[in-house]
Image (cartoon, rainbow, N blue to C red):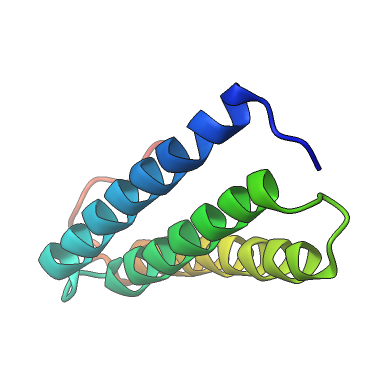
Length: 106
């Protein structure tokens, strides 16, 4: 597969941007580890790393590779679990709040 200059410049940019986002997600997890959303933030950082690897490999290898299909499936599964954890945590926090507080308005 021939690569244009844009593709070749996009590879280091994808690696740098994804690494920075992953580092910030890990730092956020370090801060919010004991919060109700600590597990979800940790899962988000793993998902960001998986998506960075996927998009970098997408630029390097051909798009119809079985490895990319597996990596895309894993990344989508991580995102789905992340969203499910956030929904469960939101419901748990809503159920556990004391009766003296004002009701939430959505």
